[in-house]
Image (cartoon, rainbow, N blue to C red; front, side):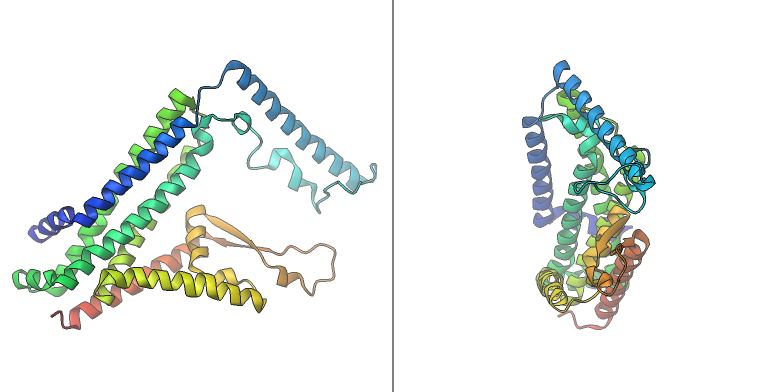
Length: 333
């Protein structure tokens, strides 16, 4: 406990961590001020007009579905502008995940239920970046300055020291992320109540997304910690990420496109990151339909959250294990 308490004090005292917290609060403040400046309470006339437009949009979807059924039955001749899918259930309003709502037609009005998911994704992205940078600087600065050596003179157990550092980091990041998330969503819920519309948020879906986001934040912090430990410097983690993005996510993707490689997204870490957060991501592979002679070819494929979890957790665990192994054997002076 003394070691953990000491590490917690060291983490809180770091100027870089304090700066990142200030930047985090600043980003939240800018988002709140921007939202307040671009929202207003809708008038009765605005609500009536938006409700009428939403009802008209739903009615058009129903007419499109009825026309599709009629074309399939042969009672109506299709026109060039008609969209006729293989199965008319694709355009059935009763089976759609989301129908047009009043919030879609309210201009300049913040609707919490409509915007909550996007705001949550923004929050998770910022917290993941925060966790990665703090994790990398926390151990990287100590290794570069010799602080770890001084700590080992007091507690000459390398695994215990590194484990205490990692555990303290993950615990502190998790607490800060949970508090920031609650405050962030509460503020925007109040904005929806007082300067916009509350809407009907899907709290269950938001809870699932938030839970996955917190796992991602912890993984990002652990990755930054592990890469900086292996490279013995904060810049090692930053350089590794920059090199990966430029060489693989951009360069390799371009090469795969030139060579017409089938389903190149499966080789990208960003694919599994998106799949984990969103639950599922869909891609289109035009090469899969190159030799298909039928009139209809479904070139889409999906990557679910389970492969995303396996890839992200597997990569993080592998790097953390490698970091502990290197830390145990290397010369720290």
